[in-house]
Structures are given as structure tokens and as C-alpha cells.
Image (cartoon, rainbow, N blue to C red; front, side):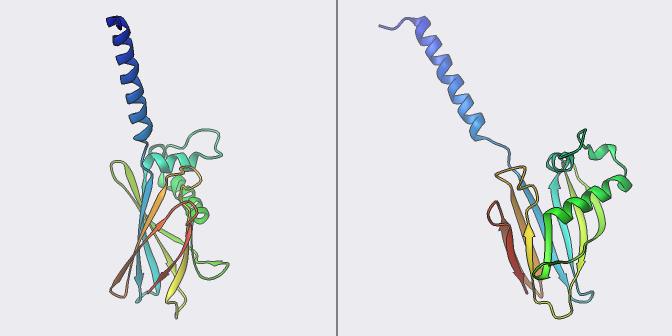
Length: 171
């Protein structure tokens, strides 16, 4: 009925289609994790943001004539780029339209990611903040930004995705 040559070609095409389907399905996973801690003694928020190096470099390269490679930059060159990215992508506010200022505290490189440490002062009576977190959402449609808040002995976790860029953190 069917020749062996036809069956081999059909089998090869079927295998190639299956592989193409699996490759398309197994897309890259894009996520960041931010740990936020309310420090009542210093009346500030203390943040640790984990971001994968390749995602960070792609974001820092937007609008630049050559790709940014973090391993080729000194801290004096990298810090302003990180602060600019944070200011554009992450905003804490205790009142509408008034973003809290950030202070970059440190940077820790791991094998495939960075931990970026920064703080933001809080007004004395603050019991919540609004967080707009759109880090990498303009680059990756599947980007998920996970935020874990620890304040006054309680923990809260939030997920920021496309269409869900702003949420309240309460303590």
C-alpha cells in the first residue's frame, strides 16, 4: 500500500513536527523575585531583587548602540544603569504620584543572576505602600515578578504580570 520510502519520510516529518512543537512549547521562563522587609527601627523598606543576568543585560541594552555586558562593567559604571532601571520599573509610593526614593545598597553576583539590594524611606505613620512593579514586562510577555513582603511578623506574597503591574502591600 505505502512504500517504505514514503513511510520513512512520513515518520521523519512527524518526528520533526513533534520536535518543533516541543521546542515551541518549552519557551524560556522569565521571572524576578523581590524580597521586601519593613524595618520599623529605621522606618524604611529594605529590598533584595533577584534578576537573571541575561534578562538584566537585555533590559539594560535597550536603546544602547552596543549590547550591555555586566561582566565588562565596573561597579561605578553598572550602579547608575541599575538605578535607572529600578526607577523606571519599580515604584513604591505611600501617596499617589509620590514615588519613594531609592538608595542602592549593594549587588551580589551569583552564577546566573544578580541580587540587587536597595532601600526606601517611609513616612512615620505608613501602614501600606502601593507598588508598581513592571520590571521586564515590556521585554517578555511571560514575565512574572514575584514579591514577598515581611512586615510586623506577617508575610504576604504578590504576583505582578502584564496587566497586573500595581498592587498594595499592607502591614
